[in-house]
Image 1 (cartoon, rainbow, N blue to C red):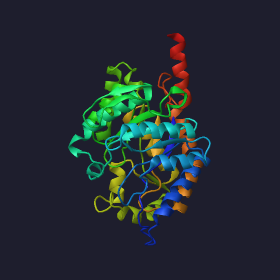
Image 2 (image 1 turned 180 degrees about the vertical axis):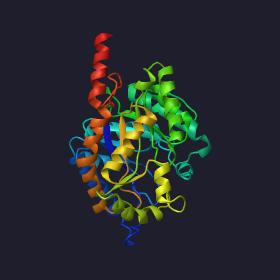
Image 3 (image 1 turned 135 degrees about the horizontal axis):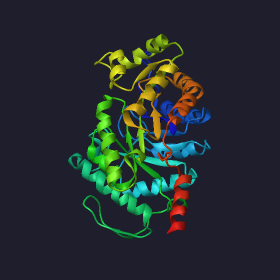
Amino acid sequence: MQFGIFTVGDVTQDATTGRTPTEHERIKAMVTIAQKAEEVGLDVFATGEHHNRPFVPSSPTTMLAWIAARTDRIILSTATTLITTNDPVKIAEDYAMLQHLADGRVDLMMGRGNTGPVYPWFGKDIRQGINLAIENYALLRKLWREDVVDWEGKFRTPLQAFTSTPRPLDGIPPFVWHGSIRSPEIAEQAAYYGDGFFANNIFWPKEHFQKLINLYRERYAHYGHGTPEQAVVGVGGHIYMHHNSQDAVREFRPYFDNSPQMGGGPSLEQYMEETPLTVGSPQQVIDKTLTFRDNFGDYQRQLFNVDGVGVPLKSVLKQLDILGEEVIPVLRKEFAKGRPADVPDAPTHASLVAAHHADHATA
């Protein structure tokens, strides 16, 4: 099982000091966080893609390539690649290039994003969001898997005898997760292709995400990729830790209360009760995370958010130390207990290459 962190790259005022970092500071902090994640033994660092303030990660490939040059082991992922408003040809080429630079340590999470105006900014119609996601991803897969592509669709100009360059490393495209917090059509899309499905369950109650994940598992089996239990699932989480749980709550409350996403509604305590947000001791984070398997079945990837809502870099790095030293080792051990042997691990470039060679050897 893979454990990691994801960032949305928000530039948010520190509610305890009143200071807002500059864009430059926030971008550099994200790089430092990624390097720290590898240092403490995490498996994945993922960044979102946004094109509006207060967010800065408008070019994930640029950031991830910079991080790739400064790390050796950690998988570099997107927490959202906007499949609806990015040109599939550009996605194919940009991420194949990144895959080569990172020696295969790359995967993607496709999504539609949560900012409506991004559609007209890139010349697209938000009313076609689902259709764009379906058509653009079908083309992306074709570009990565066929050397010469002839293609015609609804949303972009046709392609004639086109070759996307560079070709994927070792002939194996990056693994794709389809991320969704609300759309059953995206769960269906992930199942159809046998790709991964990532339910970023950080805002809503578990029952909502159980429906999406169960749909994906059922349809994954329907399309002949394996049993429902063998489907490739990832989930999110949002944490803030201190060795004394009361201190964790005291420290995090100002950030929660001032958060545009979380503040102004339910109390911190009610929010923690109804969503995966965990603010407390390392043991409380362990206990809450282990309930995710009860809710969603055995799954392959767990990503935490530790750096949003204005939490300063110094505190984020402290969170990562606790996560790497005290939380993840226990979670690895506990999630391994009783895990069926036929439930696959999360795909990596090495495992996908090996599976490809094995399939060709038996063909």
